[in-house]
Length: 171
Image (tube, helix red, strand yellow):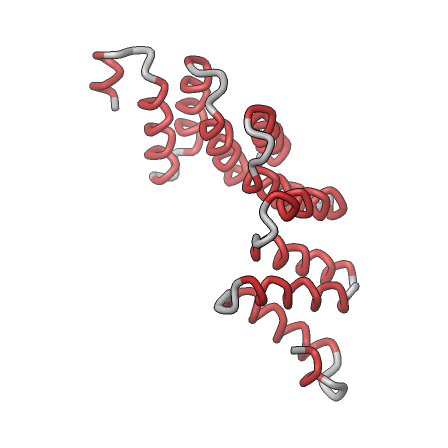
């Protein structure tokens, strides 16, 4: 990519791809800087904002990651994955209601987003609303029957929820 930039210094895609490569190597700061350079050249680079949000989230800078995802959404309003990742960042910050709202927005755009239902289930489980958690896990499994994490979450919740009482009816 450095060679490409020597030939064509304003090549946003080269910076974008460098960002991906740096992130894969675990060099998050270099990844973020590469995405910033791509965005400076191409201000409407949705994927650069999205991937920069991922690097920021992985770094633990949840507020900055949310801002980056929101910029991606300004460019591409129907970007379900950006809403989903905002939900993950809010969840990591402990803002559970905001997290649920973000997951719901992702589901409005992409109703078959099993991972969003699974994460909603996790939040409701943590809030003590076990019935809603179970419903969310079931929705995830209706969409994606081989979704191992949702199966594990549902089984774990069922065993802790009521070992004596109607566990067979919950699945």
